[in-house]
Amino acid sequence: LQTPGIGLLEFPQADAYGRRFEFLTSVTMPRGTVDLAQDVPSTNVPLVAATASMVTTDRLHPALVQLFVQAAQRIHGESSWFGPGGEFPNGKPGEFPLAKEAARYYRDGPPVLQRYLPFWLANLIDRMWVVLASIIVILIPLSRIVPPLYAFRIRSRVFRWYRQLREIEEASNKPDAKPAELLPRLDQLEHRVEQVSVPLSYADQLYALRSYIDLVRKRLQGDPVILNVVGASSGDKPPVLSQQV
Image 1 (cartoon, helix red, strand yellow):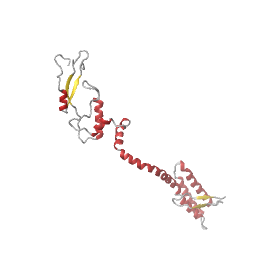
Image 2 (cartoon, one colour):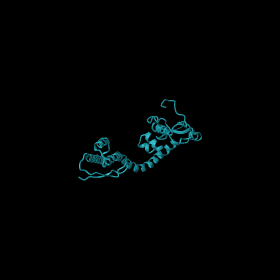
Image 3 (cartoon, helix red, strand yellow):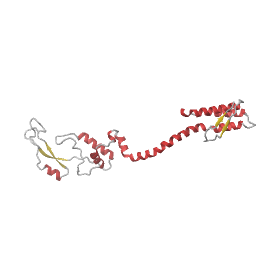
Image 4 (cartoon, helix red, strand yellow):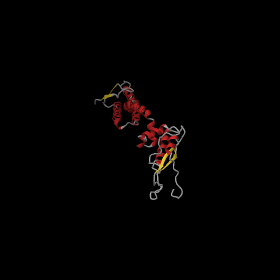
């Protein structure tokens, strides 16, 4: 445009062209845009420009539509000779229908989650919020059920051995009881109990069981210990034992 004899062709009817044809846009090159010192051009020049459209198929994933719009805005959103920044891309009507995701982006801007989270995570939450809400509704009652269930599972590691301990103790009370035959069974039971692992918060129950095993052993070995085992069975509460020396 600074070459002598070369200038822009004015379109006095540029606005009319833009109104009649959706693929054309009326633009104006302001005076002095090319060279302020030489005042090139010397007047405002009305022009027409073809509208550039980003077109894709309806098979494109909606999440990618937003990415394309954001990329176009980041690359082409700055001001130019023919207009201020932010004019492209835009959601103005054109030859093709505007995608719903693009229309939502132009109307509301980037989704709130995408402003603080990575795209993949924000898009997943945005599209799965109904499923996430259902999961949360399920997790709330589960949070009340799981702790008691966990406690029962841990306690059952200890309580399951009380049945065998009671059987040995009851066998020792019979008139024809033979301690020499019962002691190996008790040793085997104690060996298995030593392999049991429980969290520290439940260690007192494990050590209580081991102490009861020791009391039964003393009984079988002839120590003056009276051992009473009350109502121990699989799944019941631990037996109540009392001793008198």
